[in-house]
Image (tube, rainbow, N blue to C red; front, side, top):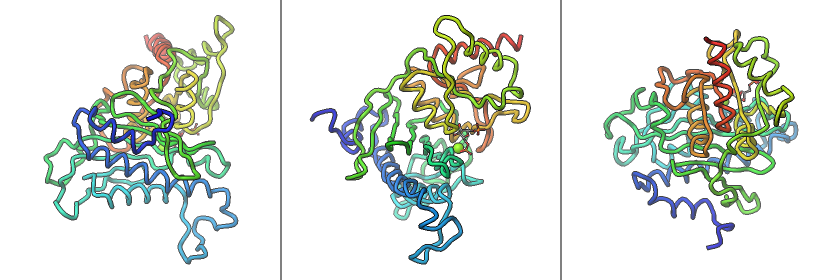
Length: 336
Ligand code: AHM
Ligand code: MG
């Protein structure tokens, strides 16, 4: 078949056997995410019509309560995963605790857990700027047939079996990895089908874009300040260009295509940074490494960290390998 016309559904089936556990379950799981992504995409696209269709808290014409989009996205993803009976547990950035799922037929027979940030960058919705969904999939570590425990969720990112994101942008894309490279699929909204548009995505080894909220500059550690000054210096291929959407998925997506670094450092106001290790940093780190890039907490690999809590935050530096290494170098020098 012509590669250009390959759908996500076809790609999942074709690549099922290359997955190390060779499990149809993982394929079903990615199919469920594909379905939820389409539903959420439909809702996100209506966001600009809120004055017409009703805002959160209102009741719509069918008598249903209107919900905030991040709450709605959370419900759609969780409901879809529950309905398909393919996971034994879900943790969401929107929920305080993880959810244990009992399968209707056989109790707790499923092997996979999902961690999800249903609508990341949601402050961008009101102004018609891209938002995204981030997901991360692990095999449970506790025995199949028993309820999941916190240990199933607090696994290092290195244990991920799949991860990805959906970017609801100028077009909607689903980008994911199962540990065998990164592939991107673009939604054709007219027929509701994702097509393989970006096979084997790779971060350029270096780039010219740095993405950071520079409004926090004075609160950053010295090493980060030094690296930002380095990015701005007139020398060689510098100064770099500053691009910051404030939507991790979109900033990452652009940097993967063009070459760049995304940074959310710790600061004197946020001692561990802002981003969540389990819902945001680990899945993006898995994608970055699978695409020849790098993800660090400023000192070492994000995916090597052993999580201690579900909503743990961590400083995050991610993107083109040489740029992340340079940032680490400046941080190490300042810490001497
Ligand atoms: P959220 O999960 O509350 O949406 O926060 C995560 C988002 C990232 O997408 C984005 O890169 C970052 O927060 C922006 O934060 P800031 O406005 O502090 O720069
Ligand atoms: Mg988020």
